[in-house]
Length: 358
Image: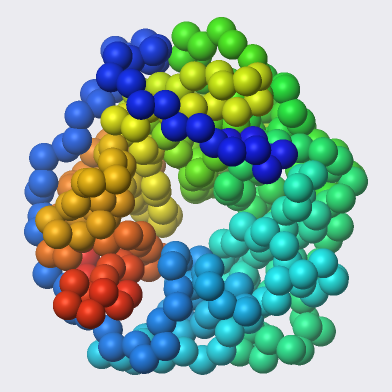
């Protein structure tokens, strides 16, 4: 998918077009080691479709069908209570068009995007978001100087003014860029996965930035591709990448549609979504998404397995949840897993909480 608002074409074929040269990692799912029984949390006003972050008993979720962009909830044991809704959509200094969000160092960090690239980065202390109209403690840094960029779907925070972004200038053979607002510099990392593709640059650049996931522990970075089944660890030392270790090596199978758009195969794997703590990496492997596919009675984009790795890339365990889910998040102390699922009787969204083995 490109950022000129052109359509993503899906190509339905059975024969693979190209794939990574594997041999480094095994591309099969791991065996289930632990089965989890969870508890549904009652919530009378749940609009969230994905988790932004969890701090203590505060759960922040992103909205896709509300005047506000985020909701703040409190886990009260058996109930998830909405405290407030925050962040307006718009172009003013305190509004956001297409934000990417994470919670780090007890702050909600937002990188906003538009059709050209990144607009700004904003930091909001978590203890201040219950009063969303009081923006005196917001810290906003302009990023419009970055110019036109093919921006992906995730970022990492190094400090208040320095981030790692999935994306780069259109057509450059790179999908990760360090942006340093303190000196207004963009540093491409020349991160370019070898997959046998020899077509135009933009379709490849886009497929490796769209829906990609980035996680960090110190100088170790996890990259998980949003298509195929590719995930690797590396170190970011200065502005260079070293010590790459591939965990899954199945690159996406795709075609160059027109020099800008890419097409994916309907029967191909749909990427890996991950989150991480200082101790573990939690990865959900997404299989093919077919219109008629159901998973245990749930929509075809629901899953019930979460693979766990340490930060050296070693497999630890594979959880299976009692109830399939759409998305998930784990508390920083690795004690609790939250998932967004659906009640099959009412088809209303449901938060399910699981206690984990530490």
